[in-house]
Length: 297
Image 1 (tube, rainbow, N blue to C red):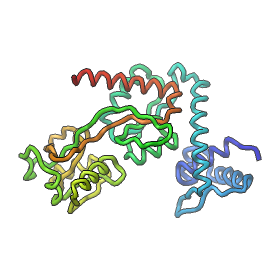
Image 2: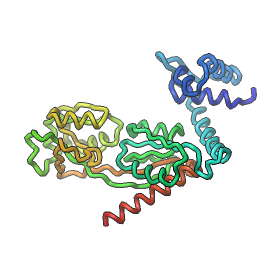
Image 3: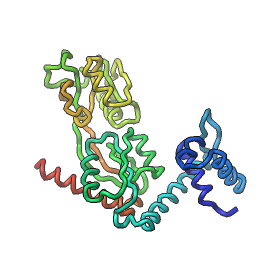
């Protein structure tokens, strides 16, 4: 059978969304239509792309291989569409950004949108593991994360090295202290982000290097909840100064004897920079970084 772009788009949508019903909503087609298009691919080429898994589907090994190819295909189509719809003049187009937190990327967005108000700019706030998958699926163009993986054609721009601090509530016994050691945290109820986040990885590595094991870890999936719990004296946390946000309910304490910091980067796949909208955003981001560097001298 001849390859149909509609069939490939149907496959890509289901693979990306993890199920037929959600993909149908995103692609604005009926679920039976999606099922027929994917069935046509499977029958036409004698392959199996998905297996049922609970309410959703799971890709077969061949499906995963095809997803890599369709991600590249639709990335290239984005570039074609940019030319055809006039995004070369930055009057239209879409720029999809991701970040583990908004602190560093928002000034870059503001600088870009001031110069180019036409395109639609979206920001996805996720943990690092989720952002990397969004990058691989070409659902976002650029992500702000701490540790860029060593992947083919993935490029990065250093942003900042953000120090990490211990945070306690105003009524905590440590509130008057200027510093604590990592071993002091072992006996505390430690409020931490979930595994796979850059903050958790940094903290776990620090404990491992010091030969320490915390007694009581409580996993929380967002910083706002962690700050609220620390303020209520329900535990202690270690976070970047950016994530602490100068919250007046918290006391920030230096952690001595160990290097705790978050190196932030902008990461993207090299071929995405061929899109003018992405290239101009990165140029504006680098200008913002240059201004910050000169200001801090």
